[in-house]
Image 1 (cartoon, rainbow, N blue to C red):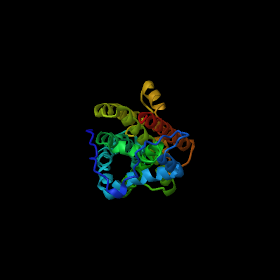
Image 2 (image 1 turned 90 degrees about the vertical axis):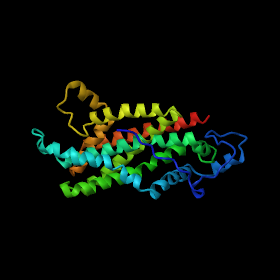
Image 3 (image 1 turned 30 degrees about the horizontal axis):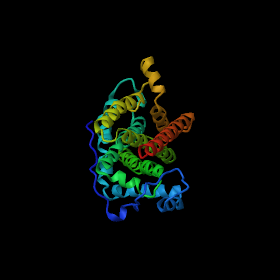
Image 4 (image 1 turned 180 degrees about the vertical axis):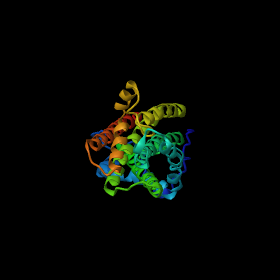
Length: 291
């Protein structure tokens, strides 16, 4: 898969955050400048909301990016699912009810793991530096960006489900909605980790793509998204057991089957844990990188 970065376009004036000549720190000081006092006057939730809306507006104005992100999962659905259905030995496991939930997690993994490339471009064009001198808390710059990932992830999932339904996907609304919540939380975590990687490598684009491409396919294959790992060798099953995506995939399949079990709980915990790790790493990295 050849990475394609979304071109950076300048934001219209109404989308820009208020500028300040002083870099605002997250740590209070006794001699706080006016910009710092203005920042403290806003709540953390207000800052997160500001960044969230700023990142969301380009997506709303250019919905083609959301649809384009569906191309690869649809190719897998059209070309891979018939092979599974025709494969002897898989029985009723090889069905859309088993395959589509894995595709939803795969779509989340692909889309959110590449979002750091947009931050890389902003750092190279100076847009990120301009964000750092606004009164908005630095932690909100990561949290707001990561929360934005819920929208494209859930949007692509809904489109994929809608396309699959005419071909036999049995819809369980309650399970589907809970499954969308789980992958939304997972998208926050992976997106935050992608932004963290971008902050670490800074202007070294090749390092970002090397790490992203090196990790994405082992995570995909070891999670059982495309093929079950239950009958694999011991070493493969051991690696799959430490892959958090394995539990998310199992939870999605359980929910899309209209069932509730401890599998769902483990999947939800894996998604929440990924989000906590990603947001914590991202907040720490952006604070250190701006010092």
